[in-house]
Amino acid sequence: MRVLFLGDIVGRMARNTVIESTATLRAELQLDFLVVNCENAAGGFGVTPQICDDLFAAGIDVLTTGNHVWDKREIVDYIEQQPRLLRPLNMAEGTPGKGVVHVTNEAGARLTVINVMANLFMAPNDPVFPALDGALVRSRLGRDTDFILVDAHGEATSEKMALGHLADGRASMLVGTHTHVPTADHQILAGGTAYQSDTGMCGDYDSVIGMNKAAATARFTKRDGPRLSVATGEATLCGLFVESGEDGLARSVAPLRRGGRLSHV
Image 1 (cartoon, rainbow, N blue to C red):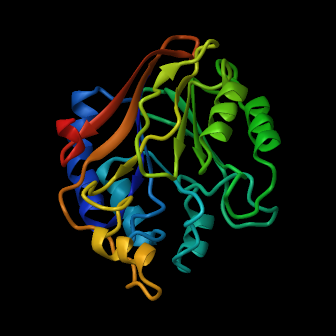
Image 2 (image 1 turned 60 degrees about the vertical axis):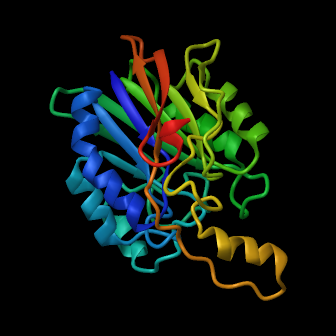
């Protein structure tokens, strides 16, 4: 199977670029599935039902999130009705929505997406390691699904790397999100799981992690800095492309950087 994951969409420019690029990416990479983290798609903070609908209509199969999932109130009812929009699995019991989804494409290929949020330097949630372990026990490659993608949303690289090793040989790929900066450690772990500590963002890299650089810098240098706003320059799409074998484990892994400043690196 051929699966592409795109990192956090930050703001309107990035959102439009993702929507406009989806058909091309699906055709060019011959994708079976396309998964995107959308938690910053609405002005940099949260996501709305309309944005989700637009992304699904463009051809995205599953949307993942993280700590900004509830920034827009209207998403609470929507997430209960739309199983392909995930929130982190290890949020407290009774939280709206789900952290795991199983989807099947027209060819009959089966994809499972698991969305978890790390614990270090993040908002309090249930422990992430037993949550991920339990999800991987309940969904097994070959038996229940053909491909397992894990979005590990977190700040600490060490924690995301440890989650990668926990999932090694049990998931097809585990990708980190949240920091908005792509790491150079994409690899296939010893057990066959594709891994990257952070896929980066889909957004303007002439910025401070997607925010207007003047406003963001002022917040570090002045007592009363201006309100943050999304940078509006050309977006770079950042993601991770994985091709798996018949056993569901990764055979190849490659980062994607398209458009904007990082495409020239």
